[in-house]
Image (cartoon, rainbow, N blue to C red; front, side, top):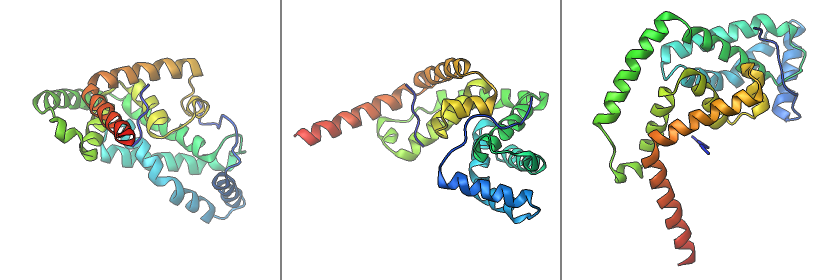
Length: 219
């Protein structure tokens, strides 16, 4: 994972000339013409990324993420006949998935469960700080980053996931979340700042690795 820290479900944003997006639109037209296989192809292409988005937005809860991804595609199925291509299908589906996850996160049961997760994660983080040698391991760094993202407040986590994990543009994020670009950037900056604080040991190790690589090239 690359982490660059530095009420409707109508589409928004701009269409893309990417061949995959054009193929998506062809499948949409196939579905709108009454052929169900068009939607099945869309699901096969996008199901892993939609599930991954839901998983990170819902702090790694696999059961909730599976349920959210399934509900998102059900909503997508119901709304796809009205799709007119004003945005990429993936951006449209991301907006639906984000809305489904927001509804889950707004529930009382989610907030109560999240409180317990936050306390457990904080205790585990204080009890087990990895050694510098462990931080050199990519899997260890990945786990630390995923854990830190899961601890972020919901409104910051969704933007960090969309921008720094999924690599979505600010325009796509604004379309998917319904936020204006200024709000997107300010919340994203707060989330990144918090991650830098929590993950400062990882950034130090990565900086030393980068310096070692640079010195090695000139040695």
